[in-house]
Length: 412
Image (cartoon, rainbow, N blue to C red; front, side, top):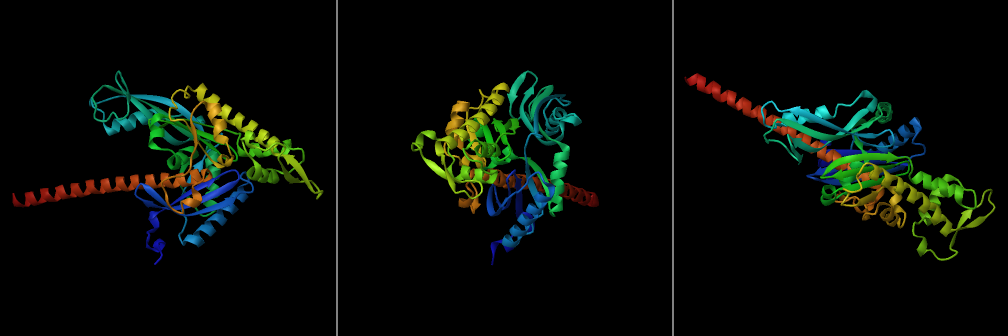
């Protein structure tokens, strides 16, 4: 019997990553802290800015996935990123009524710190940093400690409300429900970062087609997020304009994937590649060295812009775990060497890890966000079950005590 038929419907988890050039719909099954990938739909997206195009592609993705897995896709965790996503740092402080930090006090101080004005947008995530208790600082978990005033610094990630509403509309029109929006570099971090990196301090740089999104982790907490509007599509556009023959963007993208590199020194002198001329006039030979220089110039600019943002926010000195690159642009040969020079830090390519199932086919940086969404969904479901189990135990204990009291009253 097919293993998928033995699984309950609620045990399946779904992650949806809608990028500027493609859409990934992942199906997984929870295996404790691990995730087993059941299937992934990888669909090119003709126009990510066109509402009907996104809905149509998503409907196609759902149809294909449901047909191949025989599982109904309904509640999906959706990645979100872009310039409309912003990050704010706020501080909160509360007086402790009992003189000892309780779970309620921790929730209250986080809530106070994460009160943002309506103009800031819709809150997606609140990431608490370190706590302070009176004069003592840098406390990871203050619960149970004695003191008078509890403080915390939180990182609040928001998104433009209408952008989230429009994305939710697309998903609803395709017959799906949004289980939650997830910051894309946060999702990617779940699938590519190690515990040591998150603890020491690491910047995850996710370079897709439309944007380069960044999240900085220190002491296993998100400290900073940002996004820039320069990424893979800009590299493709440069290729289209800068070669010595006019070519379409689709052809430029094909050339980038087939002949693109960031390692100029490895190229043979006068090495060329064929480019179809306009109007069926035959092939024109183009310099691969020129192509590499065009690509490298834009990649260097992207990394320098990110490095400047990290420095401006005084984060370059605390990223002791280095830089982890992920996203579709990581397929460019030698991109990590350019990043290493730009950031002055050790750099590695982040590939999805720790999963089982169809892992070999998807151990690719371009799938980091989609698979990370499954890890995030898995964590949310496990925490929900744990909370529900705790509540059920509390109710059972209460009922048990009431029953004992009734028995005692009967015999008194």
